[in-house]
Length: 187
Image (cartoon, rainbow, N blue to C red; front, side):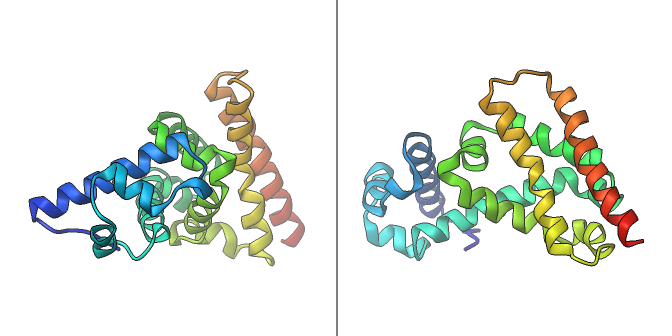
């Protein structure tokens, strides 16, 4: 649901909902977040929430769409040029520089569904279509591409044992070598 109202009260309400959601994301698993707790934290009533969102999932979808757009803005040119290293580097820098809430939504195991939805939307975007058009089994290659985030998440979980640029280099080699092998096999 896109919210573009110029009404100050509406903007304040939407900001309060979003802030309350972000606070809850930082302290709870998604399965523990309720509309009641969200509305209490936002200091609004449930009816007000439902004027703007049909469900908590509706709010989550809105956040997912914003993150997808942000990431695609960063990686689109590299993707369209089929520059794997550029895609990996821009994506890792995005993950490394995004705020705490975005990082938790994209990297925390309790929000895995969020990461899957965002990744799926990015990889199915027109910017990435050329990567997958070249293969006989695009869904398999798309699934393989998801490894990019697993590599980053593992690096983060292990306390960032190597510099980010070195991680980008290794991940780019792993992803592009595997991808190149598929293209060569099918070519």
